[in-house]
Length: 466
Image (cartoon, rainbow, N blue to C red; front, side, top):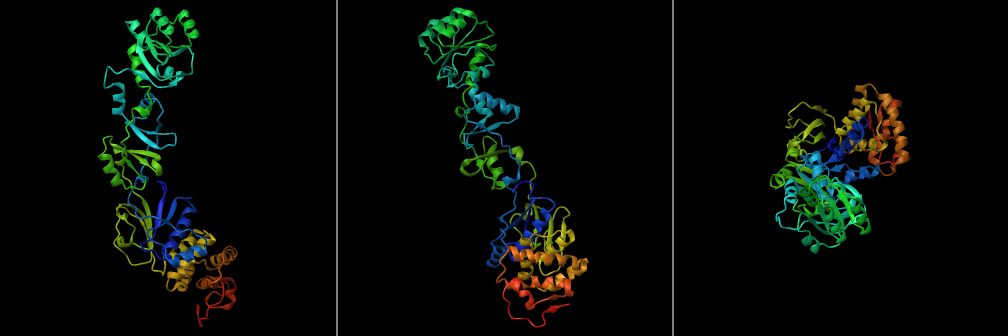
């Protein structure tokens, strides 16, 4: 169910009329706005109602326990990055989108951590200044991009895991420590550059825009050493390399999470108690869905609801006090529901809400699907008292008796061809309606109508209505 959907729902402990009218009204409203209206229920389906649904091959309305605003009702920031993305790229995305926290996922979009502004600062300013700067395996092209460097000698595609040395003085000390996987940062000092290449460094980073001589290029090619040239100074190169670490190495894993079905109030508690002042929304298996923050939760969010077959708080779905009631259709006494703004309210003292919904189909000149027509009939017959009198009044009041009942005759043929009606004795009244266009009266108990609807129950003498 999306944020723009409108829930059409009946009362608690729903009867057949409540279920069938909800399905019917949702179909009518969706005729103009496709898939916007969701038929729903807030109770179990009775055996009687299940029989009607199975007879007409219809699904029960979706079960909704509460219409209290939930996480699914608020817009989520669905952005995230993979755990192998360099930290500097994570920082760039956070800056571009003005995000204080970035969710980190694995290759299956499973939430594994969160990179925060604090985490970025901690990565930039290492706790121990004496800690040896190192590099994890990464493509040479990626390192060149991070350093905004020009690749002078692309000797290798991948750099391995090694240490990073900044060669300022005491060259012989650095040379004694270096291994073939290490990287050296050097300035405009060609002898030092050549010595480092001869020592077998994996890559040489020439900083501060210093020129790269032909002898250095030739030596690098001969020793299979990569050479990058950048305008950054040696200190900045070192800092950018520290930010080349993957997000997985600086992320925090104690991330507060909520689920789509959690209430807004619960989400507010989680976010307010979080050191990140945010929470990640996850699905099954911690699949990342989105991010919520204090700003997100400041929005006034309500579920949009249409109530059918009741107009009292005691019968309504839980959380109705926090919902945006758009419309009420009922046939019972007036209850105590109040709203902050005007709403459509139709309370017609007929025997069933299905009768009212049927009338709305007539008013809109919309023919219901065979399945919905059968369900509305079931709602009439299995609940409404004085059903025939009521439909007679509805049809006469609208002045569309013959036109609508001719469509009912066509509908009966559809029902006969699409559904197994055998044994549905209670639906015999619907067959009687077909005769209305011919004799201007609804006849009940006429044996001529039984072949379509099934075996005849005992005749009810005098069961005719003018």
